[in-house]
Amino acid sequence: MIPAQFDYHAPRSLDEAIALLRQHEGAKVLAGGQSLIPAMRFRLAQPEVLVDINGITQLDYIKQQSGYLAIGALTREVALEESKIVAQSYPLLLDTAKVVADPLVRQRATVGGNLAHADPANDHPATMLAYGASVVARGPGGERVIGIDQFFTGLFESALAPNEILTEIRIPTPGLGSSGAYVKIERKVGDYAVSGVAVQLTLAGGVCQSIRIGLTNVNPTPLRAFDAEKRLTGQALSEDALEAAGKLAAAECSPSADLRGSEEYKRDITRVVLKRAVRLAQSRVKGTN
Amino acid sequence: MSQHEISLTVNGAAVKKQVEARTLLVHFIREELQLTGTHIGCDTTSCGACTVVLNGKPTKSCTVFAVQANGATLETIENLAASGKLHPVQEGFWEKHGLQCGFCTPGMIMTAKSLLEKNKNPSELEIREGISGNICRCTGYNKIVEAIQYAAAKLQETR
Image (cartoon, rainbow over all chains, first blue to last red; front, side, top):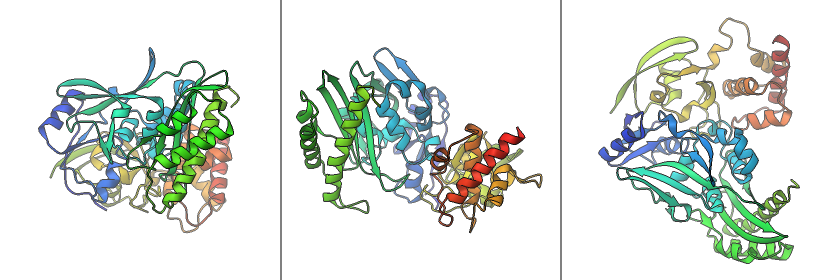
């Protein structure tokens, strides 16, 4: 299938890219293209202008900064999979990068695109919600930092302005006693999640001091499971507490029935996956996994 | 709309062509370069039959625009036995019966070749994960895994 016609630009700098977005209303940014190009083939997306940022290689980096991990928006999924820093200190991020689409798609797909696309079926949104990450956006007026809780505004809609480019993702470095996990149920490799749960928690003396939970593909937007978080905060992670939290998450999401399952099934699988993700994160804090 | 002149290296040879921005790399390869060994299986970025090696990375050529390959180095299945002698991965598919209908084979082989360049001695699990972006509807994958294991051993020998 052949996409509709468009004009193509390949800027070499961020400033040039932003100028192009400003100049062409309705232009789309092309990064890895692993969601955008399929959408264009089906003509679900018909941008008149594409601004290809693959030549702006200074957006491709993973750097440990003071207090946070900085990921350039053009960083490919495969780079996260192979990163030593990620493997050492960001297990939730590593879990996620490993289950995005398939290994070939991960050669090109970018972390920035996965977020900017704001697809509730994508995996990084839930993970970034669990981390309490933030994203850096640059536009004609300069740079601003957007908290992830304010980023996803609707189905395929984000807080990015049409002339802004997502340039960096910042993940707070987990402190002592903190770890995380992402568990995704998928029908086959390469499919979107039936349900996915991202958890980042901090334990002290067996008690959950704080926890953030993000849900994939069970809501019109990537969703934080606030009720489940509240239920577990300040608690020892007993089987009863986990079961109760799982049920709360199942109730607070809003999945729609499709080929991947009925609404009821997706809610129930979310309950189960939440428990698994919390247990996995917990085992990693203790260093037993 | 926009037309672009692109220059790239295809299977070792310099190529210069005019392309429309919306031309997918796989269509460019098959229709402009007449290299029809690269297949189109699904149109949904699912099957991997169109896998080529772009700048050293296995890539689904249905999900890249040809214009994006400007300046790139591209390798397709046609390059593997260019001298008439099968590449060890091709030999593996031959010896271990790694195909039935053959439609997925070019993509499978390009993925397997890239995998073995990165990981010279992959475990069975690593092979299965490595080819998980390539779909085969005939073999049940077991023979493909054996073919790649054969190739890994052969490549170790000849090094």
